[in-house]
Length: 155
Image (cartoon, rainbow, N blue to C red; front, side, top):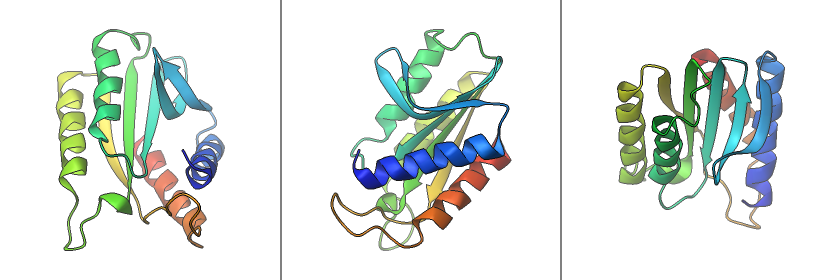
């Protein structure tokens, strides 16, 4: 992760902590060997937020997380909410979204349909992140706030 991605991730975590204080929030929470970007948990509810900035295979994050659900690694939770946040990198110039995002969403939807305690929600982070070392968009904080609002509504 570059500096922009880390800063945005931490801002999302901190804002979620303000908006949903009943959860304990952290970044880079490990399930087995897999770090999840932002996690919130209570005694019975686990919230995972995967941030997809420019990843070539965003389906991998969703698949691994839901693989661990199947393996019973999150069995202590009655409810598991998975949010996959996609930046404008996954938008097509001609409109619509890339097949990489479509496939990741498909896997998330199938997994959520397969486990009664799991919900899956794709969320749009409404800007394309800068390449490493590039200028940060002025509106990044307001876009992060909109992203958090969407997550809060669905939790």
